Length: 521
Image (tube, rainbow, N blue to C red; front, side, top):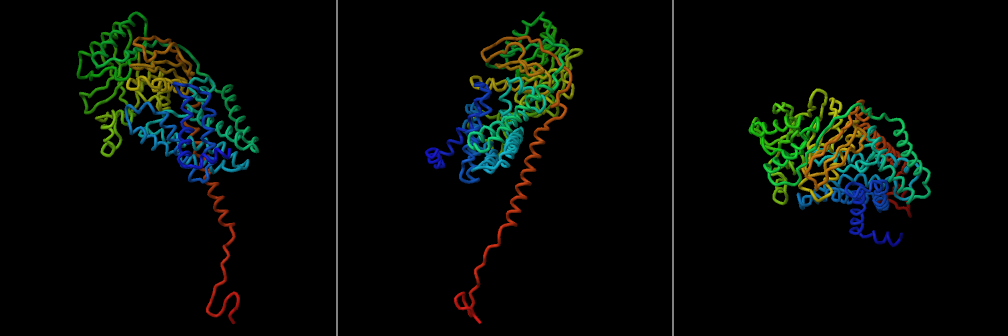
């Protein structure tokens, strides 16, 4: 340990170690999908931060670790944003500076049981505060939240139905803190074990008591994935060809991916008629996604549009939350240079104003989202409360085809389904396309990034409302209250210490008439 401490005495080596330690949790996400490592992946980072010589250095270690996490999580953006990927990682990584200071404050040295008990709730709350801030759409949205690494773990999905992905993040950090204490502070095994037992008890209680979605029907929904095809005209032709194969299969709805139509249907009635012909031939409505300049209002929109046998049904959803740099450049006057070093949007897309629940046939209601909107738990929760039977994400990750991005994106649908108790269809242009049932379980087989095909799914429909839909982000609210209470306690403790500190001794004054050796008369 002395050798390691000497090696970490170098600020540069310590920073490098923090970057590497911060990047470790990415192994829990797709594509590696080593979900179990999330429960110990933060331990090296926590141990490094607690060993910092000062709180200021701990905050810097937190920043470096956050940089490593964000860079590893978004490394597939490098071909797209180039050097700006590092700038983005550094800006987002700074959010973990305060968390690093909190780790040092509570766990440095030989912490008391009181401090360790506080750490088991304060540090997970601090982590949630970071995830809350970076969940803002302008900072890239809630992509890669720690809890989303558990998308294929059934007990975790059950927890998500109660507290959303936020509750999963809280419990994962709590387990990591407890393990770090067990490793580094053997005298404090009791509170650390208590934290582990509490996490296990919470999981068990939710497993036993949380309501399960009541499945009461099914819908046959087909996904059309054309694959990597250059040009909107060629892509549309391939989508038409694949869709015609669905004729006679008794499908209720056909879903195309994001940007599946590159022309404004209001300005191209010939294309609208072709899509209506497809709807009649298959006997199903078709949900397409148009990425084009509109003829009825200025600007380029990404819109989910429902087409029936008689043409456009009038059901339309315009994407509300746009991808920073991919679909608009924040503060373009200041950051417009990003378009010269990467593939940032040359022109900002326009935003929609509200979510839409569409009526398909006589009894099916669907809630569409576009691209990374599926990362936002509040959007699917709102659509569920508005009566959506099926959640639909139309996506395209073709720019990042040979990276971890397609797998990461598809996995989010499992969490959104589990949180809301509604099935979710994730349809893409180039893969990965997948469907998940109302408990987050996979339905049917996925279409990988090498597929150009259609797939029909028997999608189970559910009724009832999950606790998360009813109660919302209560985990976040509880975390903010914990942080406020802890901050108030720290402030009062500091004030008491200042008041109880002895007055500094003032040496006797020297005068012209005397001195300590010869007092004046």
